[in-house]
Every structure is written in C-alpha cells, then in structure tokens.
Image (cartoon, rainbow, N blue to C red; front, side):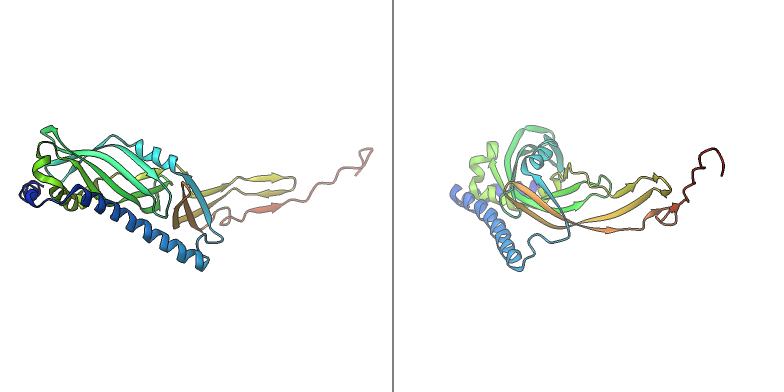
Length: 258
C-alpha cells in the first residue's frame, strides 16, 4: 500500500477528470444491472423465474439494510499498514443484484486524522444458508470504489490518482467487507411431537432438512430467495415409524355383569 500511494502521487500529473471518474462508477453499476436484467428476461422466457415446488422467502430491503447498518461502524485492517473504517450504508433492491453503497475512510493506525474518504459501490454477492446460525448469509460484491477525498494529497493525486487507488485497492476492500446475516430463521430440523389420541399412539419424530439456496432475485424493494430442501434420515422409534394401535376396552354391561 505504501508503494501504491507513491505510485498514485507520481501519476497525479496525468489525472483524469471528475466527469470520467463518475462515468466509470456509473458504468460499473450499469453493467451489473444490465447483466441482471438480461438474466431475468431469459429466465422469464424459459419459465424458470420462480421455480415450482420450492420454498420462496421474501425479505424487505429495509430489513437487509438494517442488518448491514447494525454492523456499523466497523474497522478492519487493510493490508499490513492501513485500516478501513465504514460508518454508513444504503441498500436498494430494484434489479436482480440490487445496489449497495458503503461510506467510510482509510487511514494509518498511527495517524487516524489523515483520512482518505471513499464510497464503495456494489451489489449482492453469494448467498447461502449458514449451517451454524441457520440464517441467510449474504456477501457484498464490489463493483467500483470511489475515492472521494485524499486529504492533503487531494490536489496532488487528481482524479487519475484516485482511480488508480480505487482499482488497486478493490481486492483488499472486498475481503474487508462484512457478511450480512439476514434475520430469517430457517429450521434445519422439523420436530413432530408424540401424539396420543385414544387407542392410537405416534412416537415423536425429528425430520432433518438440508436447505440450499437455489435462486436469488432482487426486485420491487425485496430480496426473493428460492430454497431447495432435501429430507435427511428421519430420527425416532424404528427410524421414524413408531405407531401403535391398542384395542379399545369394552365397557361392562349395566348391573356389573360381564
């Protein structure tokens, strides 16, 4: 990162305009959105947009945004000599991948007052069911990093130097971003209690489910997730089959005689 900063200073004389920087940011966002729209059109034409016989979960963008903002402010090491600090975020779910921005800054641990402010532009990344929490785990995919201000080096770097920092620091920032834990509990085991009704008794059962994310769609301000479920080995008496039927006792006739 130190060499990276020196390189950007040397590149300051051939800086691009702010208009070009904005164009590159918008281009990265639109490429993701267009890709998502093309995939939606193909899936709709094939009739596979919402697969049948699957679990469908809908989550409002406010819930996802609150889950992300709940983890902020956040500080994590960026390489060996820098720290990234994130303090705000927005989530919009209008196309297949959604649009997520995070605002923050980068600084050296020994000089936190010398900040380089930035905005991260991205969308929804990989989504899976967390085997520990049984919640949806969502990563953030970075499309573009916008260096908004470099403090005392702002004029020296120019737009070209800022773009250089953004390009080279993308992978480092990608690894530093938080993973979203969406507060939607997905039961991994269905417990059927024991039943005793008259002469019929049914042992308690545990039906394990193996859930996996099959399709993800952001649209209309919601995140739609279709889940595939496979039933594992049922646990209970005789592997889940413990039914007994007892002969109902006859009442004695009136007068006490059998």
